Image (tube, rainbow, N blue to C red; front, side):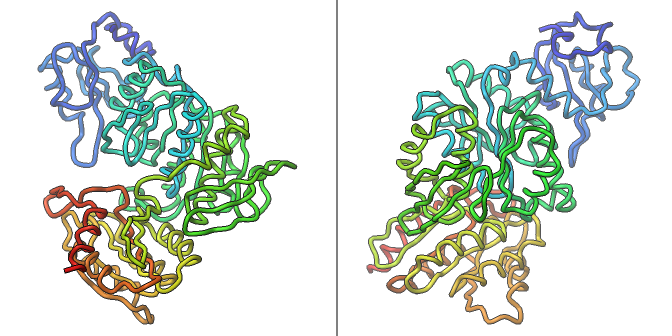
Length: 479
């Protein structure tokens, strides 16, 4: 491909006929004829390797400052942004050949995207999914390392979806994906905002920066569907200029839920839009999931589907792995696995489960290492608000000492009356929870959800599936 076909810029006129064999921002992948994009990261600045990449065979480099490399350097204000656009062009702009629906926010993204995809597929529309748990092309499941893949990987994935005949792509759009321009030249037919609560403040310097990153999605969409139950959602609704509609589970909105009834086996509610209302019965429990499903239905209506074709798909949907997932025990107590790893998510899951807990609500949780430490005591406070018993343990400690993380968590319980046990090893903590469970208790295992691994010191990944550990623990109880 010619360089001028990748970059629409007069600055490349002199070398526009150069044949480009590959595009990359990774020095290890540069070969003869590559276009190398200099990106400044947290630990390495690609600009420092630009001259070396030309010596290695690169046809040209993209950079943000004059490196003295003559006409083989292409200057731009934002290398990350231009790299995303280059990747879009390299793969023939696959983002223009499908309808994109994006979901952003702190909590709820995975459930909403999975429900939307299920509805679209049930209505005969082959759909791709990009998300936290996995990527999907129709029924094909692909591994993922990031909620929003890196720019080249993302466009390569979209190209595969086009080749497979996908009409739609439903994706979780992370703050990282937006502010690092991983989504390239993508434009979204519809964008959903769920909520904004404390998370990723190890990367974003404060909540305002986090909000502004999320807000970027609504500059590149035709239509917005926004949760006005959330403070940041109400703010966003007032600030954006695109077509916008609100959704709520607490008050009247463009789309809202009324007459909500929650059970351990699911929920029912009236989905209301204008002067029309429709009874929805779902197998997914949890008050917060009523909000998620309301958003998903609204997005599908915006995509042009009829409500009568949406409802049957919603009502048969079984739920998402690791999202309020009931792990079978065959006992007189219940174990629920949930990805809740922020204070707000912990409060949401426990508040919802509290409504149908017959005896005690036991919450087992920890906090990840090398991540936002400020939320650790807040996690404890959120858990103590609704749980009768807390079991404080590890999550993904990474390169931090698990005991130090737990000390940060326990700071949130100082001066309170919370009943808690500390069991550092998460596997032993789960065994402990099962051992103390009584008839009618519900144990919520918070933080891991769909993850089947734990990240230890040195960033070592070990196999760790809580479903397997629960089964092992139950066998020990029988001995």
